[in-house]
Each structure stands twice: as C-alpha cells, then as structure tokens.
Length: 318
Figure 1 (cartoon, rainbow, N blue to C red):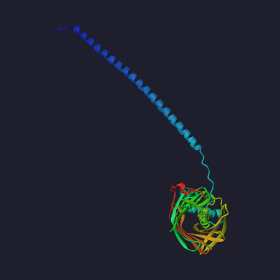
Figure 2: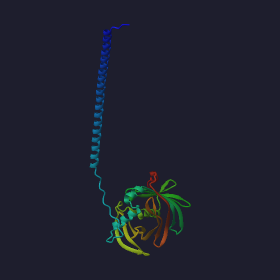
Figure 3: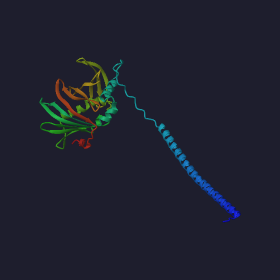
Figure 4: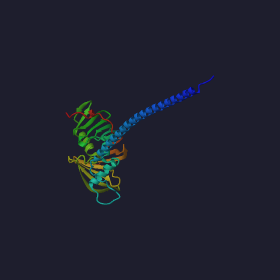
C-alpha cells in the first residue's frame, strides 16, 4: 500500500506537539497545587509557632511572679530559749538552766514543742496502795485522763478509782474539784480534795511547765544524798505553792520532790524511769508524809494523743 509521506509526517508532528502541550499543562498544574499546599502548611506552622511562643511567655511570667512572691515572705523569728547546761563546762549555773535542762531531757530532746505535740491528751492506767487516816491499807486500780491546756490551771483531769467496795471519780475542771458517784455529783472530803490537788500542783508538771504557769524559780545550791549530788530547785507558782525538786547534777532527772502542807513535810520519790512515746516518764512513785509511807503508785500503761470525749470532764460543783 502506498502512503503519502508528507501527510504522515504532519500527523506525527501534530501528535508530538499535542503531547508536549499536555505535559506542559500537567507540570504547570502540579506546580500550582504544590505552591498552594506549601503556602497553606506555612500558615499553619506560623500560627502554631505563635501559639507556642505565647504559652511559653505566659508560663515564664507566672513562674517569675511566684518566685518573687516566695522570696518576699519572711519567717517569724522565734524567741531564743535558755540553753541547757553543758556538764562538760564549768561556770555559774542558774535556776533557769537547770529547769530548761530537765525539760529538754524529759521531752525527748525536743523541748516544749515536743511536749505540746505528743502530750495533747494523756491516758494512764495503774494501781495504787494507800494508807488511810486510820492506818489501814487500801488497794485500788485507777485510770487517769488529762486534756492538756496552755496552762496547768486550765487543764481538765479525771481520775477514776476502783476500790474493792466502791468506785468513784474525781474531776478537776474550771479550777474546781468535784466527785462523781453513780452518775451523781458530790463534794469530796477535804483530805481527798487536798490529795488530788497535791498530785496536780506538787507534781512533775509544776516544773516541766513552770514558764507557762507563770511560776518563779530559785536555785538553792547542791546537796549530796547517799553519794549522789543534786541541785535543789524551788518552783513557786502564782498561788504561792512551793515545791522543791531534787535534780541530779549528772542525769538531770528529778529523783524526788518535797513540799509542806498543814505543817507536814511531804516527799514524793520517782522510780523506774522509761520513755513513753519518746518522752521520759517515771512508772513508779512513792509518797511519804513525814517518816511514814502513805501512798505507792505503779503505772501499768500510759498513752498520749488519744482522742478523749470532752463530756467526761463536764459537771459543776453543787
């Protein structure tokens, strides 16, 4: 078959020109799409970058303000306490130094703050032997509850005593003492009231809380008893009740105390010291009136910080 060569060449040329135009159109379209997509992604990135910068600026501003606020707070200065005695150093010893050394020891080396934190409440259980006015010996079990206050006169104390034939309670509240027997309030005998008062005002707490109670101190030298040397420390409260504490010059433990009431000299001795919840406590005491032993108390358990029902201290003297 004969082909017209001129027309054939024109046909081929037109096909080639068409393909070139199509490729050019495709490339231009792709270039436009890519440029549009790139500009969109750039705008998103710029917006995201702006958001990050704003967030960082806000965080840094808050941190700077917090730091400035923190540095401007100044702690309240605490009063300088009396330094306990250093037994390795000589020099003059004052009454306040002896008292503060005792407090430091009995508090478990934490001072008054430790006492206030641990001994917010007290529950004590034990047994006691008493020689009554007729000379007969009476045995009883007891439970003592104490609700601590800022000063000793504002404390609330309840003493439940169980004798073989009876059971009654003595309560100290609002600076008054009254009794409860079979849920009825009664006025205790004078000797019972006095004995209860002596436990409160002529006990270790009179020394351990002398400053809170507004008591005065006086150091009356030293004394040796059976080879042991003691400081004689007098504590006199605002009601002029005076108690002399015999404090070991080496251990700073109170081994005994003395006070006089109604012309009778009383002496309470402390034994079996041990730590209860980190604070020093004597688990046995003996009370003497003149040359006669009139009371011996053995503490079986003592706990601090238990929750007490305040209604157990309620009542009023009839």
